[in-house]
Image (spheres, rainbow, N blue to C red):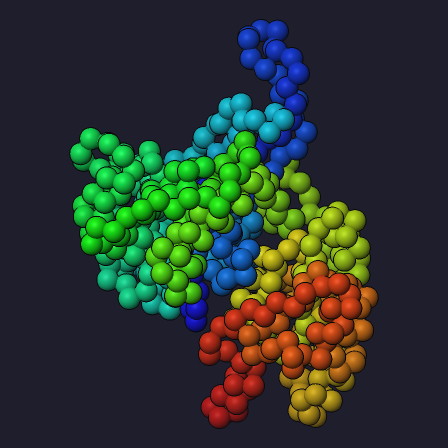
Length: 465
């Protein structure tokens, strides 16, 4: 896929209060939950975007966020992983709080009344809508995660007639999908509500929805039974789970399914293969504990009190961060380069790298090292300033400078689980690849954002001067 996966929809803040419940309240026959931990994570379209980004995909999220504590926390949780096109929100950010004891949800409390607002022609939101249109034009695929809060309605016209796969994950409070979707992914309950005729079976409902929605395909998700897929032309059939998953919390499985299907279609997979891949990914997601098992180790400073603190002290060295990650049993990601004239391509790569694990250490060439590699005219930005700019990025947990021609020595000290490089490299031509293997890690090549290179920017600037 050359462009990003663009996700359009309503983002929520999900909060899990985890504790134990060993007694009843003296004043009512209800359990007393003694809270021990509170975990915040994105929900709705934000969760779908986060899950796609954790696959190493470049993700642009078009959503509405409020300027309130929950909205600022949500933006902070998402920004290290995805690029956000922020539409205005009328009201307060929706927050869903689950009180849980020993893995079971006892009650859910919903607050917030926010809905997306604005129109493309309005001055206050014109810039955001222009950015949204640009993102949709550059997409490899688009996923609409509609939670009935207005984002999909505002962008309904730009979503019509896209020449890339459009996957629509509907919601009972949302609007019907636009005609021509490559795939619509309702749950069985949602499918019952969308179909005008009496419910008989998933097969019949899926085939009817293909006709009623003018969609290329409809996949009704059936939980542990997999999915029922119907395609234009009358073709249909079940897509079973690869194996039965033992789990108690399937929260987020629908978002995982829809995101996996959209990614597969963006990569050129057939609809049947995309749905089979989505069933497999959703099954694994549930087996690993679902959304409740997600732990974001880099919460933003805007998250309200009560959020688990980040395990890394600001300004900690790469080796201190590596030790902390290993002590916690986490997954350390590292990458390296000159990062002279930091640009959007670098930021996208770093965000996607950070999404692969629990911490990202960036290894930066020293000034002397760059002069040996690039010539006496480089770097344009000093080592000190390059480090300062990288440290300011929310997706970067630490920066380490190396003076050798390759980062092999620093890799052997860091021992990252994953070493990330951009798509203009391959493992055979990467001198540090052997050091990564000796340290017990793996090399992951992420695709670069087309049109960005430091050399190209320097040449363009010189030509214009």
